[in-house]
Structures are given as structure tokens and as C-alpha cells.
Length: 170
Image (cartoon, rainbow, N blue to C red; front, side, top):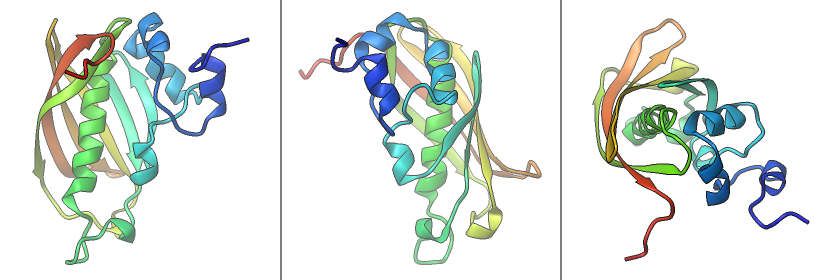
């Protein structure tokens, strides 16, 4: 019998949080490859803002998402939080793709520049994250949000805190 949080249990779920025992055995790149292949469930956040991981390599990831009216602000354009979430995701995951087994991360700081408005008519967007630096305590990455033609909608940078094992509640 498999323990709670096992690989099999998570394969059967539609969304999920990765168990620490899985994270401790596999590098960030290995986890992300399994996520992209559908072997592991996507994060719950992808149900709030639909996105999917479409490309994974060491230090580089691509997510895709299609904006819709459900993300509009009162002025009839997609809220900046949509672009910010996609960039935070791709940049953090790009940094994670460089990490060894048992190392987790959380965002310390993110800077985003919005270049042009996003609407439902914009169509599918790619959030491309690239790791810049991976140290022992912090990592950095940059990201670009582009449409099919390569037009830039937003770009940013992030710094992430790297830590082993579980988070302390103190």
C-alpha cells in the first residue's frame, strides 16, 4: 500500500501540491518535466488563471494562457494581476528548473513592466521564463509575456529565496 502523498495518489488528482518526499527525491527539472508530461497535477492556481506548462529545459520554461473577459477590470482590459501572475509563475519556475533535489523556493521580489493592454482579442500568450542566477540562498530570473507574433505585452524580473525541506511555522 502506498503512503498518502505518493506519486500514484498525485497522478490521480486533477490539481495538487507536490509532496515533500517527491520534491526531496527529484531535481526541479525532473519535477517540471513530469508536470509538463501530465504525470503530476498542475497547481491549484492554474484553475484561477488557466495556464499550462508547455516547454521545459534547464533554466528556461514556457507557459501558455489565453486571456478572456473574465479577467477584465472596469475599463474593459485584462487586469494587470493576470500578467503579473503569469510572469511570477514563469520566472519562479525557471529558477526552480535549476535546483537540485530537496530545494524549494518562494518569491522575495518581483518587478513587472506592462507594455501594452491585454484583451480577449489578444489571443494566446506565452510566458517565457529564463533563470539568470542560482545561488545557495537566492536565485534570479527574468520573464517575457508575448503573443503568437512575438509582440511584447509585459516583462519582468524576480528574486527568489531558496531553502531546503519544509517551511517553519515560526
